[in-house]
Image 1 (cartoon, rainbow, N blue to C red):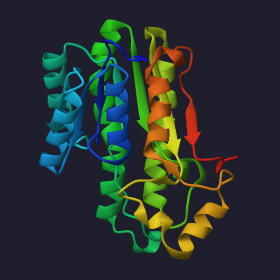
Image 2 (spheres, rainbow, N blue to C red; image 1 turned 120 degrees about the vertical axis):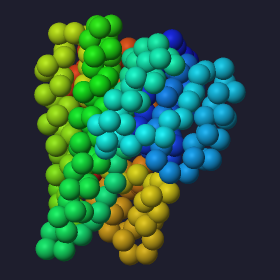
Image 3 (cartoon, one colour; image 1 turned 90 degrees about the vertical axis):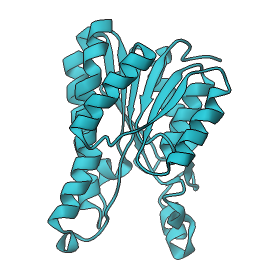
Length: 249
């Protein structure tokens, strides 16, 4: 089923983990996709080449979403290359977890700027062509930690909670232009960055809190992104979908 036929999407941090799963899901459903990466150029280009074989236009861009200048340049390039932007997934993010007493100022600022600042940078740029087209779907990847909080993750929680407030505000601002803004709050998702989840006693602790009694997959998050990107969610905006196996009940 081509739920995104004739759509153009941008996915930040789209070469690994949840971002890669979203990139793959969008292409499989008929979208042309521009995705960004910061490291591993070979992996990003290999992914773009692999997915281009499907007949969709897929291109990797080395761009730092935490940089306003990079974001501005990226949107300009994508508009020239693809002609429009229908969907933007703000997925780029980092964590620098530690107890607040041990969090250095530069670490705090790095997490806030990368996770929250990047959403501002990208959204500021993409709303112009979306307003002109009077259509668009903005999907921001928050986290269950931004909803619940968690000891040792104050900077990460603050950045992800900020994304939720931003998402709702943009939904209110742009709803009249037929631009939707929603957030996904993943729970414990198994990716190459979270392999520690399944190790030792930690795994039992995490699993005991999840009603579905298992960790989620990146593809399950991508399925939610596909729904929010498609016309199936045409009357949904300003929402946070917790994709967490029931952890946030």
